Image (cartoon, rainbow over all chains, first blue to last red; front, side, top):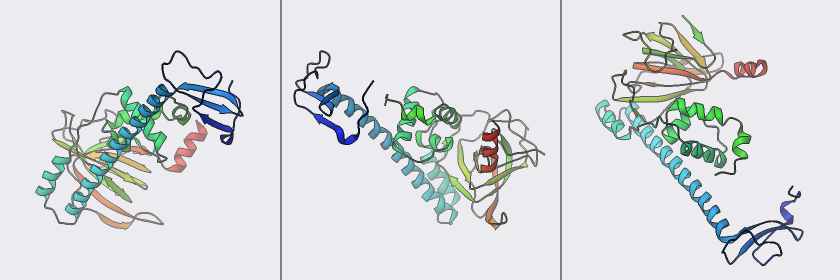
Amino acid sequence: MKPEISPTEINWTTAPVPGADVGTGTSQYKIALLSSGQLINAWDADSLINKLSERFNRIITVSDEVISSLKTSLDYNGYYIAYLLDQLSEEEFNMIAETYAITLETEESEETIEKIKILFKISRENFSPSDISTIFRIDEEMAGKILANLKDMKHIEGSEDF
Amino acid sequence: MTLAYIPPASIECDEASIKTRRIVTRPPQRNQNSRLKRPLIYPFKLDLNSEAYVKKELKPKEPIFDSKSMLNVGDGIIGAIISGLSGLPIRKNRATVKKGSGTHKASFLDIEGFVYVKLEKAFRGIEAKRYLTS
């Protein structure tokens, strides 16, 4: 069992630390997490950096997808408002709507569930199934089922796999 | 005539009467349902307490998106959030804003060209009651 530590007691170091050798890693450096001089955990520097970099890239990818979807919605709604204000004819609006049309994914995949988990981790907003459907371009029924399964937020909070 | 206040509930019709305080439109989607003869469908969300009723029934009177959808004239769904889609974009100059409740005005409008709407979230009081009794 890991000892209770407060953030001020945590000390990151890349200096050689007794007992910090981890596995058979070939990295020249180890990164150790210490509390009051006591070793809490140690990682091979290269593998830890790779792992963190992979997580970071996944967050960036999801953020990019979310921003892109929301920007598309904003742009489309701009044209829709123009149509409602009589600045665009019905024919013109229909042609523009065609260019914004999206095709929804109807097959549930682990990747989609992963993306939704990441979105909930990086945002404090409440997303309804229709929001999720628009953002990730998936079927709304499917979005509803995924959200129902993820409703226990502890499951998301506790997930180490993203 | 059936009114539903608790999800899951939906209506499908040729024309629907809507009462809402906020409409959020979303980019159109390519129709993947072969039973609906429309190339594009236009999703929307009705927010801040909304109602939707069947005004004109489907011909033939068969559900397209959900086999449990209510189809009769007067059937409706009432709740905090309603989401759905229509076969045509919501047209301009359709909404009338008038008194919708004791405290708020609301938009009243008809949506045509096939409408499928479902109750996404019940009124807060109903949700709380369901939570307490479940």
